[in-house]
Amino acid sequence: MLPIQLLRTNKELVLAGLKKKNFKDLELVDKIIDIDERRRALQVENDTLAASVNSASKQIGQLMAKGEKDKAEEMKAEVAKNKGRAAEIATQLSAMENEQFDMLVMLPNMPHSSVPDGKTPEENVVVRSGGTRPALNAQKLPHWELTEKYGLMSLELGTKITGAGFPVFMGQGARLQRALINYFLSYNTHAGYKEYCPPFMVNEDSAYGTGQLPDKEGQMYHVTADGFYLIPTAEVPVTNIYRDTIIKESDLPVKMTAYSPCFRREAGSYGKDVRGLNRVHQFDKVEVVQLVHPEKSYEVLEEMVGHVEKLVQSLELEYRILRLCGGDMSFASALTYDFEIYSAAQERWLEVSSVSNFETFQTNRMKARFKDSNGKTQLVHSLNGSSLALPRIMACLLENHQTPEGVVIPEALVPFFGKKMIN
Image 1 (cartoon, helix red, strand yellow):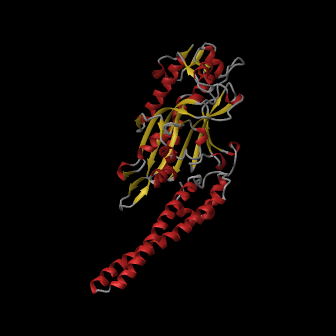
Image 2: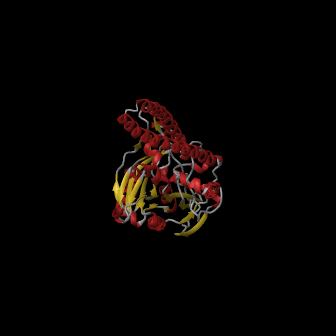
Image 3: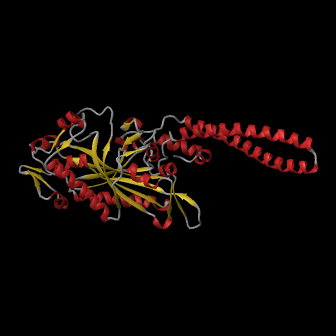
């Protein structure tokens, strides 16, 4: 959530940032500033009334001591009137603060100065690339045919059990899922991330804290009877571990990793570009999250990008890293790097990870803070990244490493999978 003082003191900067993010309702900024000015004027009136009541109360005691009852009664009547007005103002202030909060949470985060202009994914900027594109023969198969050939996965069973977009992995497919999860978690914990196993449902406060609400309400599965939401990523419960918490500065950075299933409604996802594992409603993902000192967050962002890059390299896949343009960034992000893997059978790039710095956008909502060396309380910066999401990684592993004899397992993954080939 953007701090209200930023809107008051740097309105033009905020408007420019919102335009870069392709945010349409720019008039909302003026509405927020207007209600804040009226709220502050009421607060001044309320403070003046409180001072007047305190002063009058002292004078009433003095008048009563002098025997000047009539004057004291007059002042009592004035005090009662002021107290009544103060009660009215308190009610108005509460309503205005709630209205202002409801509007503030509708504003996306400000983009970092390095975010490119643009509205569509085609305008993202390739930062660097790596890996080697495999030379597959004419008989190459897309992953949905490979999973059928080797009995790895069934979307039809998922449709029978639940509905479209809920795959069932089996045999070597289930084994590969488990191997990828274990490998990713081991890789992250070896790098100093503490492993968590969080709940897979969160309450409304947690969803607000990381910016899923109100922005992505329509994409989340809602358990209405309890008011819980199925998580779209482990980022949500893991980051909220530190909601309403003051962290010791000496404990920064806080590094966390977690596996979770992820649930996303993905309304309107149809067509050839979402076949097989390209887009599903339930999938597995391993996440990395850091809470860091504000002065170090962009240094940490580059470290996290490098961390994910080495993981992708270990899977022996061709990749590229993109800096997202303003219009393609998430609601909460200040700067995002996307990782894409080249799908050799589909002959297209597939996103497998996003690594983002949210600065104070999430931590302001969550009140996740630390005390600096001067005893001043500050908001920490939050960052997260996919390390990694499994569906498209599995799709590219199968497609890019396919041979006439079977699918070759990358060397780094063999100890976790237990064999060198799927056949």
